[in-house]
Structure formats: C-alpha cells, structure tokens
Image (cartoon, rainbow, N blue to C red; front, top):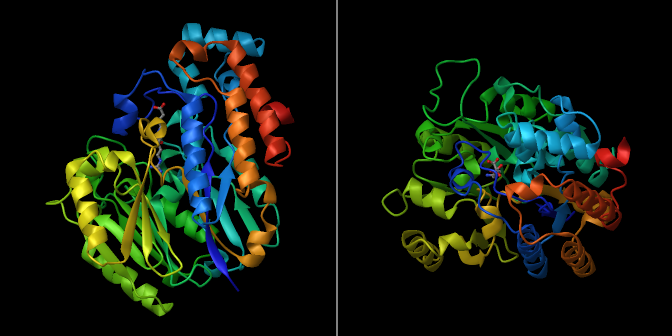
Length: 448
Ligand code: SUG
C-alpha cells in the first residue's frame, strides 16, 4: 500500500502580532511591540502550502484558534460582557490581553506529537496534543487543538487521540518540535526520536542556566507510552543545554530529520556519538540505513543557526530518492549559511536542492517553515479517512486566499488588540472558516 508524509500547515490567525511573549526565543523577544501584518502573514503561509502542493507533495491545513480568548480572560477574573472583559484586561493587565490574543497556534509543529500506525501497538495513528506548559499564551491552545484534530482525524478505526499531559512544568511537552521519525518508507515501522531539554525527576541530567528547557524527558516518555511504541522503536536524546541558552528553544531550531536522514548541528545534542549509534542500530533492525549530515560549528555557528533558522527547514523526500530542503529567506541573508547550503547541494549528497520561502511575518516571532507544519505519515486508507475539507487543493487555496483578503487586517499593534470590534471580526472569520474546512463546531464561541 502507498504511504505518504502529509504536511498540515497552520493557517495564521487574524490576530497575528508581536507580543514578545516567549522568553528564550530570540526573535519573539527582539521584535516585541513591532507592528505586524496578519494578512501578509497568512498569505505567506498559504503560498508555501500551495507551492508544496504544486510540487506534488501531500498538503493539508490546520485551522487557527479563537482569539482573543475571552474565556481564558474570564478564568483570570475579568468579568462582564465580552467587550467589557477585553477593555478591563486592556486597562489593568495588558500583558494578559496580549497573551490571550496570540496567534501562536499557527506553529503547529507544537500542536501535537504524532505516531504513525506502523509504529503503534494498536495499528492506529496516535495524536497527543501538546500541553505547551512553559508559556501561558501557548498553554491555552491544547483544548481547541484537540477539538480541531478530532474534527480532522475523526475516524476512530484509524485515529486515536490523547488529551494533553498534566499541565505542570514537570510534564512540559512541546509536541512534534522535539520529535522526529526515521523510517525506510513512511508506511513501514520506524524509529521515533524524542529530544528533551531536561529531566524533571532526575538531577543527573544537566539543565540550561539561562533560558527554560521546555520539554522534559518524562513528558517524552509518557507520550511514547500513550502511543504504544516499542522500546526498540524509540530513541531519547538530550538537547545540549548550552544551545538552549543561545536561543534554541526547540530541537527543530537545530536539527531536522526525514526518512533515513538526520541533518543537525554539531552542538545540538549531548552524547551525540551514543545517540547516532543507537539511531543507526535501531533503524537497521527495521531495514533502514541511517545517514547523518552534521553541520560543523566551523561552517555555521549556533548563532547563525538561530538567526537564519537553517535547521527549521522542511526536509522532503522526492520520488527519485533525493531530498529537498525548504528554508526561510533568512538563510540566503546569512553569508555563512548560504555558502554552506551551496556546498551541501553541490556535493552530490542526499540533500539535492534548496528552495527559499518568504515567511518573514512568522519568522519575526521565531517560527520558520518547520514550525508551521505538523507531519502526519499516513497510508492510503488512512489518508482517505481524513476529513477531505482540510486537504489542500487549488480551489481550497483560492477560497482560503479570498477569505484572508476579506477578513484580515494588514496592520496590528498592541492598541488594536484592545478593540472589541476585533473579537467580532475574528469570530465572523472563523465561523466562515469552519464551513470552508468542513470542521463543524470547534471554537468556544460556537459551542458555548
Ligand atoms: O513557542 N513563538 C513561538 C514560536 C514557536 C516555534 N515553533 C517551533 N520551533 N516548532 C514559541 O516561542 C511568540 C509569540 C509572541 O511573542 O508574540 C511565540 O509564541
């Protein structure tokens, strides 16, 4: 049976703004308070989806969330009508209003961890929504994420959904941004690679000194258990705490893998040799031949990687067995990174081509091509069981583009978030979107 990797990209929501909300994420902090352009952000994301679809890849779309999240503000004690809740929050606690308006659900690599059916004990595709416990503005995503994923992958014969892990830092879980799957072909059993930043219960693992380590070992282990993964099909590795302190807040800022290939920076991990050997031997047991492409610090520094998002790229398999790397345009703007990429594609190795995309609106909040997509490996039968409304087609691209043009503002600052009219605009837009994507009622305003 045929199998595919389907990339579901997060559609940027109408409140996209630069709130400076993510301590440890250099771009989010340095662009705080700049004015954003939600319309441009959404169109840039859609252009990437369309381009990948046109290149022959399977592409889907994941809906944004209801923002401002008035219910979240009510839980924090703001009361009255929806407009009063927003105005009171703006007056008394602007940072809380900004957090409740974040369009951060666009970075769907953090929406969930996904294990394909070939890896799981019950032969279903398993999803665990990420609790995103490290940042308040992201911790409010998972209930709606679960509903949206449930509406996209509704068939219980093929898809199993797990609620987010307990909402405490000890089980901090950032989803697929710290999870990579290696395999010979997408439909065969593979090796799932979980990268954590610290251990919550075992002091022998070193922790970063400056910035938070968002993912714990215990969270990764819980996800592997929930998904029914075999011990032989799992490898754990610790992120180098010193790169977290340099702004590598997720592993997908310093490494990306696909098929049998891991593309990573020399400084990305602790105990790299042990980890590579384990990946290689476990992949060999399921018939795969592991390959690693290490980018030396002498060619590209960690700082270059953080600024250019070289590793926050999409590594995609082409029918001829070669791979294509989708990078943000910031890679072209960094001389060392660009030179490295020229050498890489000219070397006759597995990564044969690089394609550059303008995702500046998302990049300025620390979200590159890889952050914007959730990978779901599916066989033909499973793909046929996905809600067809969320699979990208030329007509869907046209409808979504027109929908963005109709509903999105082209400029947003902190002051705009305090405008109660924005809530009405967003709800009208999202109500229409659920019809376009055939999701049914998934948003709090549609349910309550
Ligand atoms: O969680 N930025 C996101 C970026 C997530 C990137 N995802 C991956 N690497 N997979 C974060 O830090 C910034 C929002 C703001 O500051 O307005 C933000 O949430």
